[in-house]
Image 1 (cartoon, rainbow over the protein chains, first blue to last red):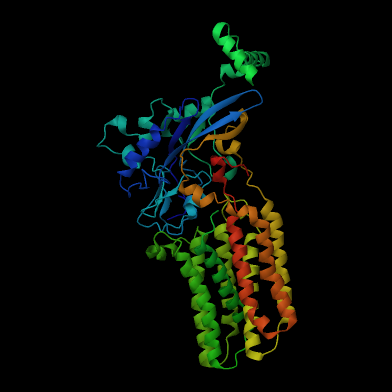
Image 2 (cartoon, chains in turn cyan, blue):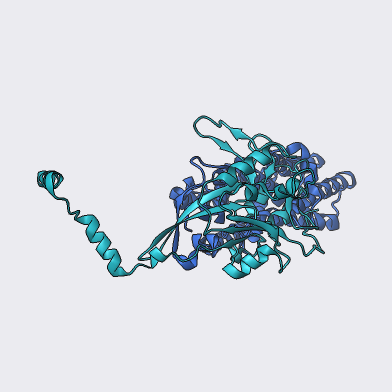
Length: 251
Length: 300
């Protein structure tokens, strides 16, 4: 049923992504693809994987942004996957009931056997969290590794989403964001965790933690000017100094 | 948004057919012999069902399309399917009763007119309910679809009447409807066309407090499905010229033909109008911007 659950459980499983820590290595992307291509649904296919114009379905993507002010510039690596929204528009637009939100933990899933591949759920998602599989022609999305987190055949430390398990820097945390006492909720409180595009009214469960203020970015104008001056006129003596001035004269 | 031909044909052709059923239900169609009834309703139903079949071509799994009738409580796409099936059923019943009794049932006709416009409304709301596309998420969007559908149906009826009686009829009414549909569309272009999503790369990433956000590296070197589907930009350069062509074909030429009183020109009106509507529909998709492109370096 594509109505959102009428009486959802207070449990809201999701991720907290720390933009201060992420180094943009794409390990989470690769492990996500690896795990989910072999899980219950159809494999995550690739078209022309080793040639020109490759395409394929992935459930997690890392964008890299540059955040600039008049004086400073900072690079922020930005992992993006399904945010398992509380008011998920992708669920209610689905005409077949294939797209649904689980009552017990709020995970948004697709029943691939009922998906007609119309793509409307992807149109309704502001975050680009859903991708059509180019071979299976059904909609693919993050399952929050529902086949890992409850899987008693796995050692306990592996019962977290593949992206969280694999992150070498610990930039991703998994937990119950509906429980104010949980570790992830505490992280969000302490670090000022935020929603993506709150104006879209989707009430995402996943939260992002902002990059911390960098000391070297608080450099004064004077310092910046000094550095600039140094870079412009390198003080080189001897032979290389002569080469430098000779080349400069040549124009 | 990428303008897929299957969707353009679906919305414009089924819109035309449902508009014909709207006027058919109101009894505006002159029938000189019983077989005319089957021909007119057959043409209208062919347009409606042809449009629906075209929409199936857009699906990854058309064989599962029947499942799309199940979620009418929340999904406009599902509602559109349900209303379309009901409308086709009512149209068949109405035509059958008219054919066998020799007299039309005004009440079933009213029902047919109502259901055909509710179906068009539902078609428009598939797009009009998407908050991610500011241009579509506007209260006028369904009114554009409904007025263009009524307009298309009427010009088809006018051509039909010309064929039946050999002289122009409904000239004033058709002029009024053409002008009204044109005005609604122009207001939509002005209002909805200018409306922004309110989202920016800063709100999309939540990093606005730190400064201006620009994409430094895309997650992938090649275009992915999201960009292919929602990052269509080819049309924007020619958008103004194309919208002028659409206005000329859909409204101006039909008006001139109507007032000229020339028989062949009036017979050509629905075809010229339909080509104009196809261009209008192509622009409806091609000009629409999706907020996901904000993650890929766009700034709306």
